[in-house]
Image (cartoon, rainbow over all chains, first blue to last red; front, side, top):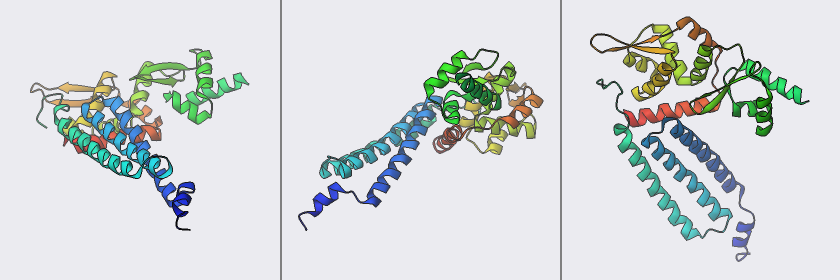
Length: 111
Length: 170
């Protein structure tokens, strides 16, 4: 029984895990689409960096899905999640940094 | 059968002036290739196509040039909010409009670029260089504003921009 349980896990992923991954995938996917379309409209560096951060968020779910339901090694999964966290934080910091330089008031009026 | 589909497309465009290609596909439950084919077959007397900021909008033939421009830009929720505020307040400073609509100045300027570009809003400058925003054709714009209803994806993208501008620029 004990030696069978890892096999059983791989064969039939439990429903809550599946539901959470589905929810995260749909949510982060929609956010990524919004981010990309908004960047397409505005074309500023900050919008690009936010879209990239959202891509990292979506990638997190993709990696996790590969680990839980696919062939990805758990240790590699763990490591890549942290790498994606670092990537996300970097992109968001970049977006904050460039916010001021790409958004001058067009009239040169005091804001 | 194909004439039927063509009539459905023309009817939908007449009911939703300024509709996008992807909305037509969704609303009529047709394949993109089908819609593309029929739009090509529809002559200018039935459906008018116009590109605006990288997207093609479709209009019934009785829309004049001003209506087509106004419908395209007022399908942006925030641009519609800006115009509604100007209708309510009359000529106003950009700062007071941004405050009323509750958006960042960068959001307002993005939408004003388009609204002035398309001749919906004008920026008047007094001798001290202060800007006042005025509607070019208030009555016509008010009538168009009442007929335009942005789609959910359009609304979401618009609100994403509002949120981001507010988080980043202020």
